[in-house]
Image 1 (cartoon, rainbow, N blue to C red):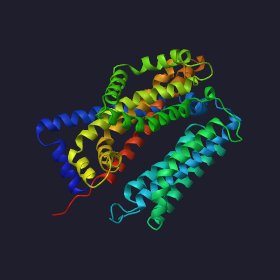
Image 2 (tube, rainbow, N blue to C red; image 1 turned 90 degrees about the vertical axis):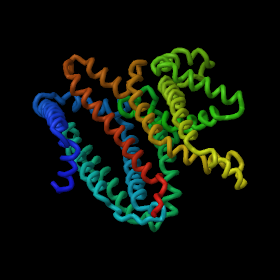
Image 3 (cartoon, rainbow, N blue to C red; image 1 turned 60 degrees about the vertical axis):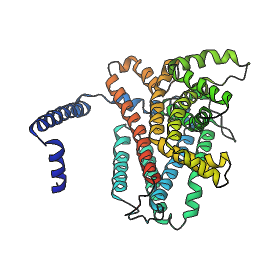
Image 4 (cartoon, one colour; image 1 turned 135 degrees about the vertical axis):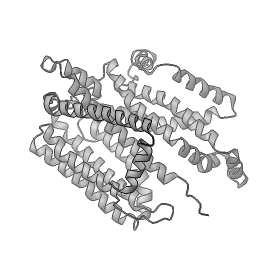
Length: 403
């Protein structure tokens, strides 16, 4: 261990006898708990419940003969992830050259991906053709990551203009692949389930609640009384009602309020409720960001000849959204976790699928294995959002001025 690291650990953990005692107790407790968990997972846990129901946890009752569409979608997501990852590393940051197109953290991430690809499919007992697909997807992601990182600086305009359009277009293509249409067999939303349904609900709510939250934040700061008080009433009503109550209202009342045939499917009712719920909280985060921007910024933009919409969109909002980014991503993570409430209204999301599996007499007493698997899946999704948020924050931070 380098001397600098040892010195830092000694200073942080063993600065005085009391700190040293507390550090030893905490490290011992965490180590004992970790050892107990690993020992249980390797020697006592019965993972057959996960192996036998891996497809059910992943896609629910999605028809087997149509699951090739989901594999195609995963391949497109892997390709888009590799291109975006490499382009973000390869593009210069504010006229500063990139010192390493493949830095140490990226090499560690690549090693972890390869290790997971080699271990997870085999641990789940998947057939060799499916394991080969996972290897091909991992290779596709890493190869495109390398190519994009190598040539992004040469194709800077293409990468800069293409990346913002890539993911919205991929989302639309993904919804067509999942639901059908354009020549594909229609797969009803009632057949979606598991991780697939959880990600669809969360991504739909995230994509739509973000612009709606910005509009509500601007409306709450508007000088027009009707717009301001309407935004305040909406935000305070949504924030004052529990999400589970709104979900039950949406499922039971929306069908009576809308004429026959116009009420959306149960899955999309839940998605809209999640969207409206998250938008109210995002509005407060954006409003805090707007309040943190000095008023002189708006006045300076107006003095340069920009009208109010131009000043807001080009000067004020970019600064406010950068300030509100940590709180916004925190709300997105909370929204992803809130999708577990969908099981209470009868939807077979990831938690609902787990409950249906544990109701099987064959798997009674194996709830610990199921819940640990769910915890790991949710942690991976939330960690991905957190890592993306931190990377975006570093790129959006204003450059520091030298002496």
